[in-house]
Amino acid sequence: MRRRGSKNLPVIVVAVLATAVAVSMGALLWVSTGFASARTTSTPSPRSTASPAFTLPPTAAPTAAPSPTPKPTPSPTAAPTATPEPTPVPVELGETEDAGQEYIDKMVFLGDSTTYWLAGYDVLPFTQVWTDSIGTMSLFNWEIDPINYYDPASPTTPVSLFIPDCAARRQPEYLVITLGLNGIAFLDEQEFRDYYLDMLDAIMAASPDTKIICQSIFPVIDSRVPKGISNEKINTANKWIYAMAEEKGLRYLNAHDVLMDENGQLRLDYTDDTAMGIHMNTTGLNAMLMNIRTHAWQ
Image (cartoon, rainbow, N blue to C red; front, side, top):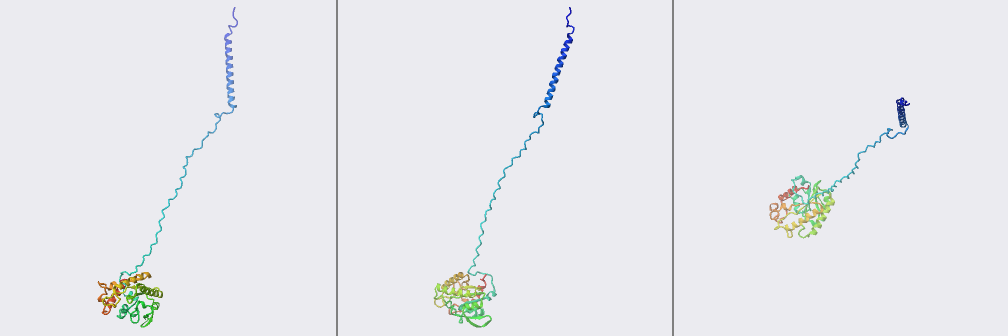
C-alpha cells in the first residue's frame, strides 16, 4: 500500500519555506517602515538638528592696570640770590691818573693861613680861595669870622660873607677844606668835632650837591712852630677829620704824608717860613695840588 503524502512532501516544504520567507520579509518591511516613520515624526534630537555651535567670546588679553602717573620730582628750589651789598665807597681818596688842571679849576679851597697862600703866591686866583680878610681863619671862629669872598663875576671886589652864605651863592662843584691847625693847641677831641661837624652841616645844607673833600692838616717843622702845635697833635687831629668825613659820607684826602720828610716834618724845600715852620712856598703848594690831581674823586 502506498503512503499518501509522500509524493507531495517537496511541495509542502517549498510552500512552508516560501511562507516563512514572506513572513520574514513582511516583518522586515514593517520594521523598516516603522523605523523610517519614527525617524521622520519623532522630535529631532540635538544630534540630528544642526544647531549653531556655541562659540565662546574671544578672551581678551588681560589689560595691564594703568601705571600710576609718577609725581614729578620737584626741582630743588634755588636759594634766592642775595642782592649784593653795594661796595662801600672808600673814605680816603686813592691814587688815580692825573685828573689835570681842569679838575683843580672846578674847586674852591676853604682854610686858614696855610690855604691863603695859594692866592697870596698867585698859585690860584682869589675866587678859588676862601679865608678871612687877614688869611688866618680858625676852625673855632667859623661861625663869626666872615670870608673875604671874591665872586667870579666881580673878582676884584670882595664882599664879606659867612661860610654858609658863600656856599649858597657859589654852589661849588668841589670844596676842599683844610682847617684845624689853629685849634689843636687847646681844643680837645669833642670840641674839635663839634666845631668841625657843625661847619660841615651848615655847608652841606647850603650847597647839598657840592662834593666836599676834608683834607688833612699839613705837617709842620716842630722846632719852629708856636707853642702847643706839633706834628703829634696834627696826626691825632687828622684821625678825627678822617672819622668825621666817614661819618658824613664825605671824602678824606691825606696830604700830610706827601708833604713830610723822613722824620715826619714838613719838607724843608716846601717852605720858606723860617719863623713858624708852617706855611708852604709855591713848590710845596704845587706839590699839594698835584696830590689832589692824582687822588681824584671818582
